[in-house]
Image (tube, rainbow, N blue to C red):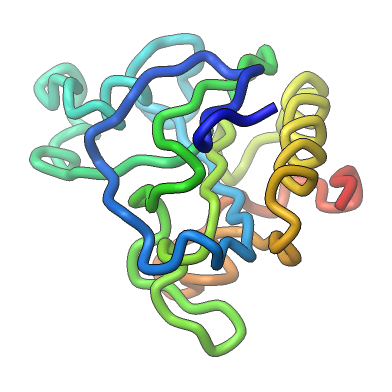
Length: 174
């Protein structure tokens, strides 16, 4: 399912916003996020543009704070269930920022970031849960060191609120 960290079931759009992990064999955490640009507007390509440094920050007033921001995630699951991959799982995507999980700081070093198209206040789609569970199953087969899954809100509680209360953790097959 994976070739050098690239998922065969995903559309590949390579981001330059990544670097090497300190330890390629230490991938133990999945972090679930959500994103939409502008917030609550779906079906556009603004997230893809953000993760590839091509977003025109003059298009919408809410984009002003994103000027010169360099971020990425390993995966992005759209409302229709399409999976897009930006960074090889073997590399460190820039999705978690200042973060801590079970006493370990710098979650980007040892985690895989999965963004869901959405907001922290709206329900996610059936297609997203199906794709997410398929991806998680395939990740766990390929990376047996993956033992934990959490939300961005849990590793950066004073900064982040995603994936939010509408994310149904009970639907995750882990």
